[in-house]
Length: 399
Image (cartoon, rainbow, N blue to C red):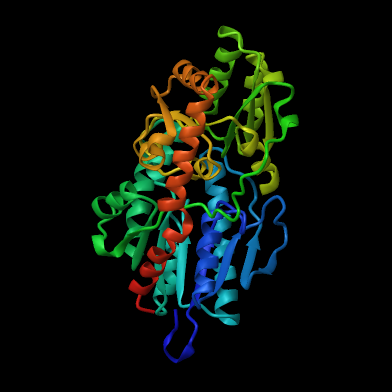
């Protein structure tokens, strides 16, 4: 993309919940913009392995800030979000007076970055909202209620869409929310799926040591939180080991989060610790080793409004590695995986266990489903199919 007068357009991406370049979607967007003539700056938190407060990677200027804690509970979230807004404002001014920016690209959660974006719109800057999570449904999934804070989430969401010049949705369900609940014009909402990059997700030989002497391994990658349904996966594992008597299956769970310690304790209570490995958050090479070793990959996300409407990156990463999948029967999960997955009854760990065993006992079916998923990623879902849609959203900003 060439800009008039060779003037490079300047982008400031703000993301609060994950550091860059660890957040894969944000990093793919940033590198796409760089390769198409934009200048890109990112404001994000520090994190394990990403402690530097400033660095330049692949031409992208990354400004990181500390967060006081990984929030769990209303008071914790209030403290975290207040600290994040302080740093986002401070670093946005730093970028403004050093490198400058023409557009703020805000990635939720939370739906509070509109405060920063709205302020700088007063000075002629554009505001693009990148809708990663539906926060009202996320709140309900975490706390199980629709109270005053749920209504507050709806208000923040409406204000975010009202401030946005253009919005990016990760799927058609999110686009409907932007239009119907957020009041955006359909032609101002662009669907840009979080397609994987195949140069990162390399298919490699399995590492038998990761199976801990077992014949099979079931793999999971994702956040260890309440709405991710890891309890269901552990219950399914216990059913496989103790009820079905299958001592030949190991479960490898990759990822960190607020529930990690409780989930480890849950595995102890279910007497399945020798059949489970919790890695915590690990580098890509360790993640890939675990997933390449897995015979079946799982997505136990709780069947609720949020997960039903959300596209999970893990599904497409499993497919990119040609892995057959077992998940609960959720709308966007089916849209992504189609025939590459078996679908268990919602929130039913026994049926999930049965579906896992069905695949483990059928090598031919595993291979055909894995190949089907891989071909779907190559032909339809990988990131290079989404890049033109991202660039179209930026063209709509009329920078």
